[in-house]
Length: 66
Length: 320
Image (cartoon, rainbow over all chains, first blue to last red; front, side, top):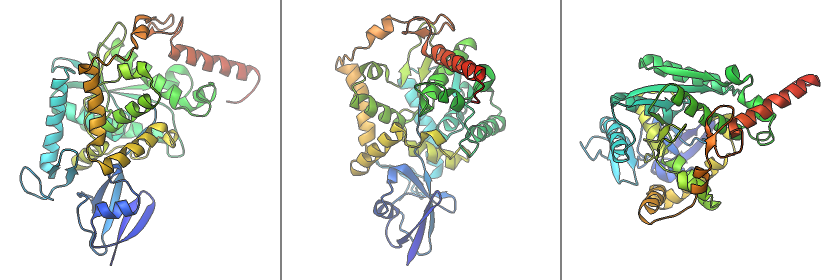
C-alpha cells in the first residue's frame, strides 16, 4: 500500500491513504515550497494518495540577488 | 476540493485566502488580481510603455504573459550574465526567454554583459573583493544598473519585475533582522521615478511563489526550472524556508507580515530615515546615473576595479 513522491532527483515511498499534505509534512517537505502533480496535472494537497500513485513535486522556491 | 466559483475539481488551494479554484477560474483569477494590484497601487496605465525584466524563470515569464494578456504595451529585457554552472544556466535561460517572446510575438531586448563589459559575471566576480566568494553581489548590482539604463535610454515609462510575495517577505525579513532602515524605507511595490531613475513596479507583490509557478504550469509556459548555481545557500532562500515554516503553522503569515509592513509605513508615520541618502544623490561622473557615493557610482567603480585587475593580471601573464 505505497505511493511514491518525486522531488527533483529524489524519490520517497509513503503509505497510501493519507493526504499529500500529510505525506509532505512527514517527509519534512514544506507544502508551501512545492506544487504536487500527477501525470502532469496539478493537484490540491488535500488529495488522498492512492496505491501506486506517482506524485511529482514541482519546487517553487527561487532566490539569489535581486 | 472543489472550485469555489463553479464546483469543478480544484487544482490549487490558496490557504491564506481560503480559496480553491479550478484551472479555468485560476487562469482568469491571476490576471484580474494583477490588474487590481496595478490599479490600486497606481503602477502604470495602458498608455505607458513598460519594460519587463525577464530572466527565463517562472515569475518574469508569467508576468510578461499576464501583462500582455491585459493589453499593456510591454517589451522584455533579458540580461545575459554568462553563468554556466555545469548546466549552461544563462544559455538555457536565454533560450526559454527567446522561445516565449517568439511564440507570443513580443519584443525582446537582449543585453549581454560580456559584450559590453568584456567579461561575464562569474569571471568579473572572481576579480573583485566583494564578489570573490559569491558573484550574487556584482550580479545584482549589474542587473539593477543595466535595467535602469536600458529603460531610460529607450524611453520606457516603467520598469517592472516579477518579484512575488515570497521575494518581498524574504527581503523584508532580512532587512528587519539587520535593521537596514534605508532599505526598509525604499521597499515597496512601487518606486517612483526620480532624476535618472526610472519608475519601478512589482505587479506580483501579493502572489505567493507557488501561485506564479501554478499559473506557468497551467498556462503551459516553459521556464528555466533549475536554480542559478550561485543561489545555492543564498540568504534569501534560507529566509524563504523560515517564512514557509511559519506559513505552514499559521496560514497567511507571509502575506500578513508584508502587508502589515506596508500599512505601517503608510499609516503610522513609520519614520525609518533614509532621506539623507536621497538628498545626497548626484550623477555618476562616468555614466550619469544617480549615486550617493562620491565620483563614480558603485557599478562603474566595481567594473573599473575588475578591468584594472584584469589588466594587471594580463601584464603579469596570469590567466583569469
